[in-house]
Length: 175
Image (cartoon, rainbow, N blue to C red; front, side, top):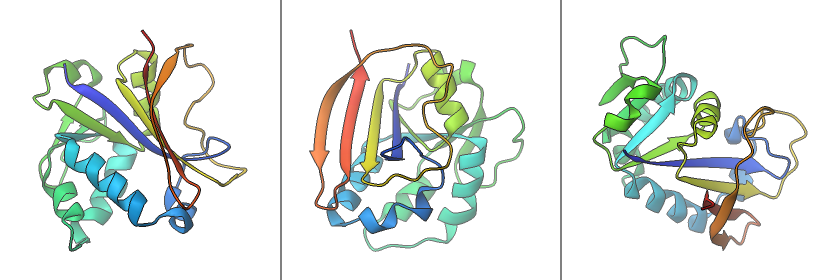
């Protein structure tokens, strides 16, 4: 089965909703490199429908000198959805949770996709959690870890602090 890596932008109070509204003051070259390296280490994206629709509306029109947009647009994308029928974004395939084991990608990167992340956590399918925690209390918005998730322990595998005060925490399921 593919290795599933969840990457999320979070506030100190656990909000992950609409990071475009609050994360930019904390984005610098070091964070950009971290995200670049993360994307280029992935074989494919795994997205929920809502995140897919947001990405598909934005990324095809982006251009950059370092190739991040080209990578986003060109890499395989798998969308877990029961309602999406004809994805238009290049190289996108609709799958079910049950089909994840058969995907050809070695490393699947999940961004956003709250409902999908909850389902993956419930089923114990997350191999790594990468949380970019921003020094900000949002006070409102969707929480990444919703009530009702099963208790599960993780071990801190990596920690990186950025000059902006953002911290990258990488966790793997505890043995």
